[in-house]
Each structure stands twice: as structure tokens, then as C-alpha cells.
Length: 150
Length: 150
Image (cartoon, rainbow over all chains, first blue to last red; front, side, top):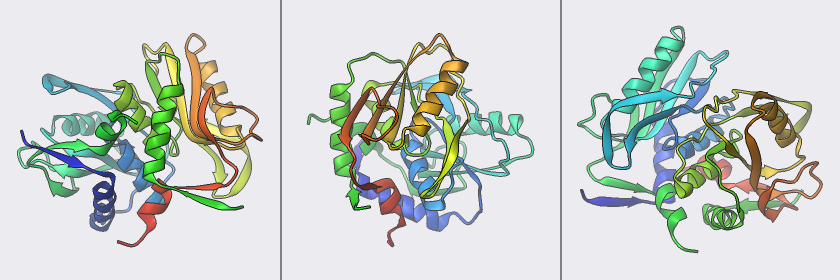
């Protein structure tokens, strides 16, 4: 698949775009590890939300897709009412579907909505808000930059 | 206090420096929310560690220091043996001391070490590894950039 490097500057612009699209008040942000971490960091700062928790999944082994997604490290949501789940990209949608299922089972009285920078049309679920459709393999700066030699 | 803007490029360089300083094998990374999130994201990619969990504290209310630090959202550490706790800055050290105390009580058989980008000499605890001493108020890019107008 064709690759596209995604630098910090684009991430910053897209995160700003995402904040303009999200027309919902939320009190908690849950990034899906690791992809959602940088996005959650900026959104937490932007919205001044300290309740930024993480959730983890296993499902990919590099580029080989496993059959199922296992969700673990489910956060204690405490007083949360409206929770925004964030990830870098909704690709197949498997991860997001499973995360939503697990969180809604654990917290039936909490509202969950979802946001991502990228979304693939072929995914089985669309996030409530996203910035760009992905038609290439995205090489995110947080993956690429740190591996380059100093 | 004098302020210093800390851009993404410096963060990237310093994170690379940090990886050169850390002479320890670890299997899990715990960022202290929110400050440690971007650092944990890059370190997780660099070391190919998927076990990146978060922990949360309350103790500052903007720039007003409260008397105590409350630690919450303590992660399930599962099979973890060696855990690196990361934060952007060790300032007073109150947060790191409390996080270490709570995690060591919860997981007495796990080894915890600590890393940060910045460290203030006046802190009551030094991280095991850090990159720079802070003598100014650091304005991190994740706080500043997202608040600028598009």
C-alpha cells in the first residue's frame, strides 16, 4: 500500500480541526493505546480535562491481523458521564467496536462517543467525528521520528 | 518565573537523548497523566512496548499547589516485572513520590524506575534518568500549540 508520512504539523492542524467538529460536551477522554495517546494529550490540554485514562487492546501483530481483539486495562471511570474515546485511525474498526462493547458493558450508564484523526471507509464502524479519510498507509510522526538517528 | 517555550523538535531530540541514557530493560511504561502522555507514546514506539498504561494524579490546580497529591486510576499491571514511570517534568517531586508509593504498595514484587524530560534540582526526588535541568517555567508544545488560533 502507498505510504504517507504524517508530520507533527499536520497532526496539530488536524487535532484543531477535530476540536471544531466535536459538538458535544464530555468530561473524560480515553485514548486507545498507543495510537490515541498524543491526540488525547493535546485534547486534554485543549479542553482542560484531567480525566484522561487509557485502554489497551491486542489484535494486530505489526501488519498481521489477528482474528480477535482483546481489550484490557479497563479504566475506573468514577464520576464520568460523557466519555470521548480517541484513536489515531479507525482502520478495520475491529478495535473500536470491541472497545465500545467492553466499555458499554462495564459502564451501562455512561455515554460513549468516538473521535479519530483518520477513518477508512471500509471500516465496520465510523467514529462520531474524524478529520480525514485514509486511503494510504499512514506513517505517523510518533512512530517514524523517534526511530531516526540523532 | 521566566518562561521557555518547548517545541516538538526539542521534545523529539530530548526523547532520543533519554533513550540513550536509560540503561535498563523494562516491559511496561506508565505515563503520569497528562504530562507524560506524549513521551510515553514515543517511548512505546521506540521500544516496541504495547504495555503503556496511564496513572492519574490531582495535586495542582493550575499554578496553585495543593497540599497533597491524590493518585487514582491505578493500572492493572498483569505480568509486568520492570516498569518505567514517565513524566514531562519532576518539579516539586510530590507527584512522583506519591505515584511511586502507591504503585509499590499495590505491586510489591514489581520493579519501578522513573524517567523525565526535565528535573528541578529543588525536587524532593530525582528521576532515575532525565535529560535537562529546568530553571524556567516550561511551556510544553502540547499545551501551547493546540491553543493557538488556526
